[in-house]
Amino acid sequence: MNPAELGYGAAWRVLRHVPRPVAGLGFEAGGDLAARRGGAGVARLRANLARVVPGLAGAELDRLVRAAMRSYARYWNEAFRLPALPPGTIHSGMHGAATGIGPGIAAMQAGRGVVYALPHAGNWDVAGVYILEEMRRHGLPAEMTTVVERLEPESVFRRFVSYRESLGFEVVAQDEGRAAHLALTRRLRAGGLVCLVSDRDLTGGGVEVGFFGESVRFPSGPASLAALTGAALYPVGPYFLPRGRWGVTVLPEIPVPDRAAVRKATQELASAFEELIAAHPADWHMLQELTR
Image 1 (cartoon, one colour):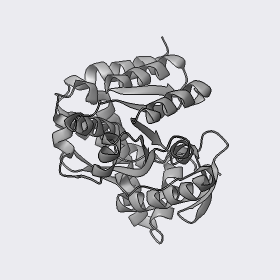
Image 2: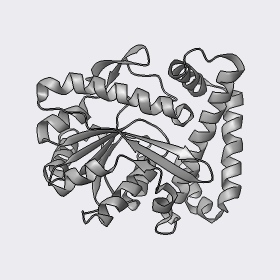
Image 3: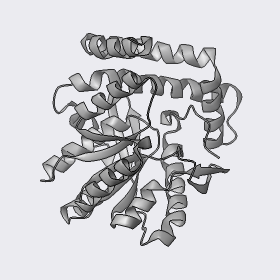
């Protein structure tokens, strides 16, 4: 068995039995250590956050990077514990801090598909579970489809697919091409929900946008799917709150009436992400270089 698979497997088995405060302190310390040691990922995070908060430098930027690494560590701690949480924990831990969900629910109740596009922020898995519970409470099928990047080795990728399936998500791999496209369009044409993490283009065929003062490429998938299926496209920003709680903000729909509007809609999505990320910069987990 691959060492990475052994490590992830052990984390999913063991951490659910560790008291939440103890695990939280351990991962927080790990985030602090990673921030102090630096490395390529932390350097890229620092550069990305410097664009989010212009003028921040020196010790102030160091503190933001440290907070961001703690946030990233919290994401992983929660990922290893989510499947074992008692029913209702996520809904009660986010209820009251979830804004803007109503229009998407109403769209699906009217038979229209919904695309939720998110940055790598907060705990996007928690946001997905919360939204599924809201759908269930409003009489909708608690189902959604999401796309994941294929990881190596395959055994680790399968573990992550199984993890997200255990949360109630239908999961398709980004490199599955036509099969992934069919799964997404089928869900949307049935009036269902698709959630896509969309702040980094992995296809090489994205749309050039302005994003925090840089020219980068964003995936055209969210806007293209909305144009193709008539689905409603919403920008979504998950974030963390103290004491193990979460929040999520859904901004107003970005109209995509046809294929000709995809480029403009993708820029509007990038601008919406700027607003969502700037509101909670420490919760943006972008340790990779933005695609150009």
